[in-house]
Length: 106
Image (cartoon, rainbow, N blue to C red; front, side, top):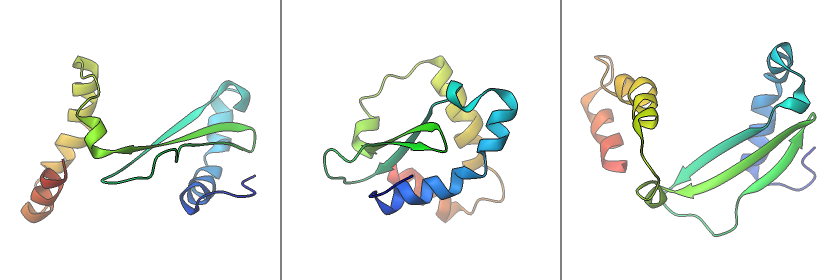
């Protein structure tokens, strides 16, 4: 598995190991590839990692929040953002301070 890796890579391996059986129910593991995006305000260069977890290729990509501003935005992306982020952030049960803290991050 991960002979030498970052603590984050180890966490991802342990976290996603349980989902392998579910993936295999849909297609052989060899047909899958997993790409994880990790965002932070500041990162060292060259942190991206590639691993094989139980036969599943996993690429961990580290990006800065500032990099998001340069990413292309299309209708599909905006629809995903609305469905999986904006609607949840604006839910009644999300405290206004939490909402503001997230908005300040982005």
